[in-house]
Length: 180
Image 1 (tube, rainbow, N blue to C red):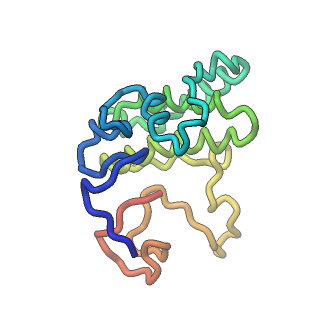
Image 2 (tube, rainbow, N blue to C red):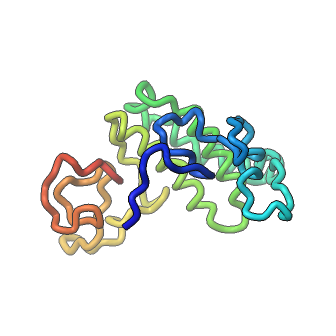
């Protein structure tokens, strides 16, 4: 097992020094805000063509915009009302719409569900666990279980005594973080 020391790395994943403001540091040690410039600086081969900034996916796929806005509106709806004062829903809604517009070649539900799950995770970390998944939106496992014969369980706030990959023995612990 390799042990990575804090502040001893660099690259596309940042430098692991605890300061997120300097994670976009280029190969030439320049801190930038432009993600494309940052990404291009870390190309494995300089002979590769530089990446370009992509436009707004909702402008490129206007037929997806209304669907994306409607589906992502759950973030700013009463479903997440308990969380709104703890975590600002606006940037998550905007990201959700953008991501959902961009997913137009299949996997649109995955993009939507991942975006909404990101807000749900931020809410849980802020102390507001929200049960938002339904059979109509980002289907959860309990929907498919036979009554009294459950094999899969959806726990929006996790369970600190459940057998999981992080807790294979199922021991109860307050150290296990709340993961959907």
